Image (cartoon, rainbow, N blue to C red; front, side, top):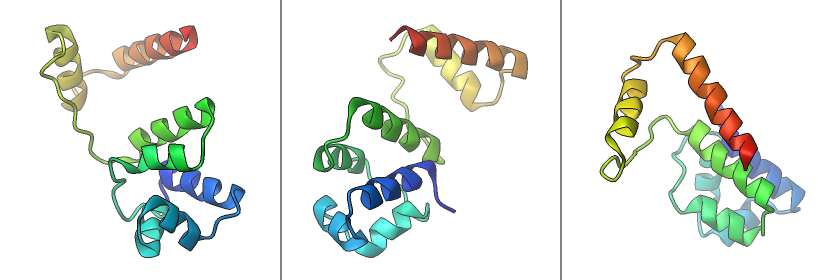
Length: 119
């Protein structure tokens, strides 16, 4: 099943008029690997997003969309907690361990969305 990142990658490829081979060549990966990423069968390489942004000169809006798609498309996310304040660590760990109830989660989402609207 295609991930959100895979869908966006495919849209970029089609809108630019590139074949899978052309895009794969531009990104320095094989066609089967590109297809596997588009279809959600392979993890997204850490440097691929920056390559896509640079090769296809994505707008700021498109850059934001593809970066968000990376996050929503990953099954696992590594977060370095060493530099974070204790309160932030506790919240992240509580989220990861599913210790926050739905009402609190809804409030957190509202606050995050409000903060995004400030930018």
